[in-house]
Length: 133
Image 1: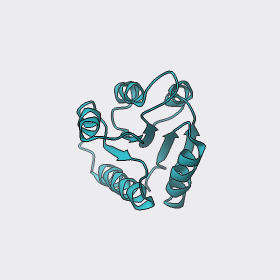
Image 2: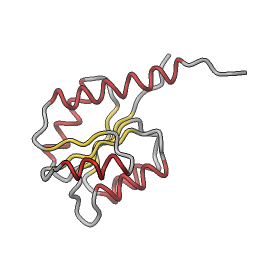
Image 3: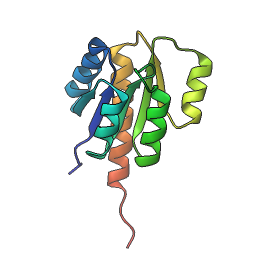
């Protein structure tokens, strides 16, 4: 049996975080929301996250710093940065420091479900690998 998958959604825009959370929940994810980087850092300690969606622009700390902290503490977590001010350079920066994906707002429900499905499959295949004696 597969372990439950946990997703964290970090965005101070409640409409955005609520939408992402509802879509992920409809896909079977256990979802927790945070509205600030500080709250996200507290949540980092609470459990092993499989998927994190994080806004780039957060009060006080940006999403890149959140990505760095999560990458160090939980390198297996798949991290998706979301931004309303996207560029190709921003996407390259994000992936070069460990982001799994980069979404420019407004993104679609299909963008969220596609990422969630891909990550679920990665964890499923990882969990199915036989352990070596």
